[in-house]
Image (cartoon, rainbow, N blue to C red; front, side, top):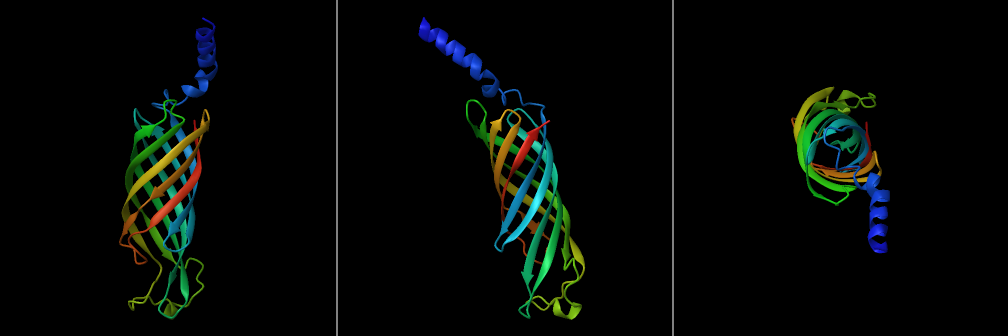
Length: 188
């Protein structure tokens, strides 16, 4: 009988943390991540807003990625990518308490590539290896498959780690890349 009472008492003490994510359906969140894109050593930031569903969540967000592209003359030019993204992530794996969840999914992105945003190079020096010249910017669109791990270390605050593989169409600086991110998500 003492063991039974001990387990009941233990369950009651752990219940707020254990059931924090079981009731997340309909819960909104905001988050921010630091991004590293490769190949290359591009970095950036993203902000997101979304809502948890039964076994998934939807989100939309905005991000900035700062990159550098090699030119034919041995110099490099800065590139700023400003994108909006939206998508859906499904939760195939989770712990019983829902403190740790893994999501897979993806979405769409659209935005702009801005070449040499600080105007450091003259037009004649912005020649790509294929002979074309980078000027101004370009509209981009793409798809973004993703895998994400979410760990709620507090009842309403989660650490997220993600790996994305965006395929960006209409880009002059590269179509495929990988992007790793780490950030915080707050349930509101």
